[in-house]
Length: 107
Ligand code: SF4
Ligand code: SF4
Figure 1 (cartoon, rainbow, N blue to C red):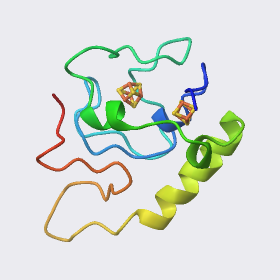
Figure 2: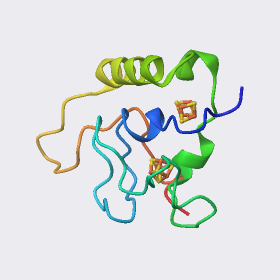
Figure 3: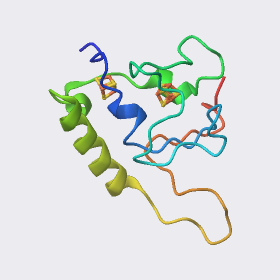
C-alpha cells in the first residue's frame, strides 16, 4: 500500500532510538517528531541525517490500518507490548519498537 498523506502516525506513536536532528536522544513514544512539518511531512526526506529506520519502514495494512487513528492505536499498542524496562546500568531510554543497532544507525 501507499503511505497515507498527512498521516504521520509512525512519526508520532512509536519510539525511535536513533538520534534525530533536534531530538538527539531519539524520539520518545507518543511524541511528535520535531522533523515533521506543518503538512505532517518529513523535513529530512532525502537528507542523510534522516534515521535509516525511518526509510526502512514500509507502509502495510497491518500497521497503517484504514485511518490515522487506527495506525496511532496499533502503533501505540505495539510500543507497549515491545517496550522493555530500562537497564539499571544504562541511561538510554527503553526503546524497542524501532531500535537501531550498529548496522542501521542514521546515515
Ligand atoms: S502509519 Fe502508515 S500511512 Fe501513516 S505515515 Fe506511517 S507509513 Fe504512512
Ligand atoms: S525523521 Fe522524518 S520520518 Fe523519521 S520520525 Fe521524524 S518526521 Fe518521521
